[in-house]
Image (cartoon, rainbow, N blue to C red; front, side):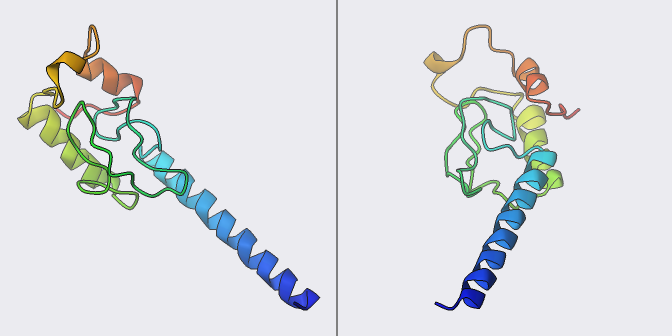
Length: 120
């Protein structure tokens, strides 16, 4: 491969890495971190993998699934709508096996610790 082609390929790769970094920063800014549920803040969930793709993991706390109810392209408004549904309609009810509820679990404190605004 000619040197000019290698340089061009290198520039394309750098632009791709910069785009991924910008996309990751945007996701983090709107509350879509890779680790933890963006709906309820439950820490034992991996919402996005290392490539910022949804994992299709179901949150044991709120029951929402990464890749089904929300994904890496979800807007903050969409996440807020789902969150409101869990808080207001489901009264922050634990979704998974009742035996797996963490000791002294407090859903509103969990959301506060995850820097998630609690819908009213």
